[in-house]
Amino acid sequence: MLWIILSILRSIPLVGSFFSENDQSLYPVVQRLLKKTRKIAIIGYGVGGASTAYFLRELLGSSVELHVFGDGEVGGRAKVVELAGKKYEAGAVICNKKSLYMGALTKKFGLKKAMVPDDKFAIFDGIHFVFQSTASTLVTTLTLLWRYGFGIFKMLSYMHKQWRNFTGIYDMQRKGETFTDPAVMTKAMAMGNDSFYHLTQISADEHFLKELGWGSKMVNELVSGICRNIYSQNISDITAMVGAVSIAGAEAENLYTIVGGNFQVPMKALETSAVEVHNARVTKVSRVVTPDKTSPSFVLNYTEDEVVGQSEYWDAVIVACPLETSDIEFVGFDTDNWSSIKKLKFHRTVANLVHGKLNPKFFGAGEHKALPQVILTTQMKNPPVDFQTIHVQYPVSLNAQEAATIDTAQVYRVASSEPLTEDQLNLIFSEYTDHTVVDWTNAYPEYNVPENLGSFVLSDGVYYVNCIEHISSAMEMSCIGAKNVSLLATDYLHKQDQ
Ligand SMILES: Cc1cc2nc3c(=O)[nH]c(=O)nc-3n(C[C@H](O)[C@H](O)[C@H](O)COP(=O)(O)OP(=O)(O)OC[C@H]3O[C@@H](n4cnc5c(N)ncnc54)[C@H](O)[C@@H]3O)c2cc1C
Image (cartoon, rainbow, N blue to C red; front, side, top):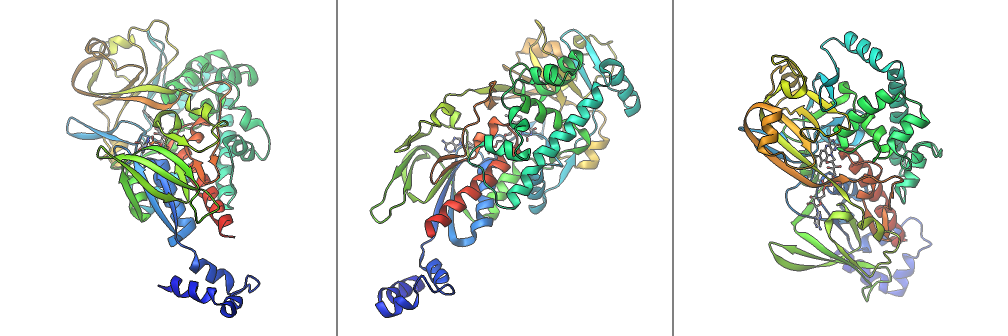
């Protein structure tokens, strides 16, 4: 009602001049009141889409109507499954204390952290363990030094340096800085120095072996094992950035999971952001110019409960799912500079969750030998079973104390390129009772060297969170992408208001 009265008043010449644009005190207020609420559509309700909703609500308050379209369960790749009466993470597991957004959202939503226990680990080369940690930190450090030399210290100092570069993003985003593409973002993170961006353009093995001169044993065993554990890909195939993120994420004392499941972060972000959620798969985004506007508007086509629908007009659209896998058609856009992204591949990884006992013989260990909780692998030649990593998976119901005191865990997660067959499970496990498989056909980008990083800006008014996965894929990266596109969309809408 108020805006109708104000519109009428403005249309009367004398009164209208009272609200002239020269009147610095009154005009902006009135102008804001006259403006109709802006409408933004977000496609995807994983961590990226849901945190975008949260950041947009924070930035734009009630001046914006937010709608989120998502396919399947809220959480996307943050997903729990049930096995033997308990729930386990089947996708994203680990958060890092240095990742500020995930930490802040976890706290804000009253969720509890379970610190990851300092599990023992070993590196398996397909025949036997080439390295095993022990319960004593001192003995483990000495064994690491014995096998890999002082390269271990270089690796630690490298990890701290890359964290320093990485965390620079938080200050910039706090000040409202925006980035049109991940290349500009990585350059800014290293204070304008190209060294951080360079990591996206060179392979991990070349960077660690040739550029940094790390020993080949350490790179091919320890570094390779860590990278295969995090991204299921070999160090010759991933960028140095993905390698650096993997190494930086290996500091056990900083790692945690969220009690009850990581999916609760996106779920709570949607709940607290006053959004309208549509369980619908978006098939098309069209750019249209409505008769009453000079700036573009957007229309979405979607399927909801097998019914095809077309949305009303949106002032801005946020794409928070990978273009490579989401099958969205874009109509009325100049797609030349970003259509190449759609052709990139995503990597498949299978989470085999197995309730059973590992078979020490398979790992070349004595029959009664206690096996470590984490088994990393080198790039194995003709392995009897091809897998990238095995680790104990704790139920999501465990709190920090319980996780730290647990000594015999029975559920293992085996990451492999294909679902493991019964015969393969019988080789790795001496016995098992239950098992379930989550086949992530599109887990994370299949990294290329040099990497095509894409752009956060698909067009004026259409922004893309998931190009950030080409720097590296992780829940925190999705939050950083979400913050960036929220700032970009806010700038865009403010400019339109001027
Ligand atoms: C096996 C595995 C292990 C991982 N481990 C970790 C880890 O330990 N720590 C970590 O930080 N990260 C990990 N990751 C990566 C992490 O899961 C992702 O980077 C992050 O969850 C991506 O979130 P997102 O919201 O950007 O994308 P997604 O979670 O994929 O969400 C995208 C959403 O968009 C929806 N969608 C897609 N297409 C459409 C459409 N056309 N219309 C409407 N909706 C659509 C999807 O259904 C989904 O809900 C792991 C990933 C996998 C697969």
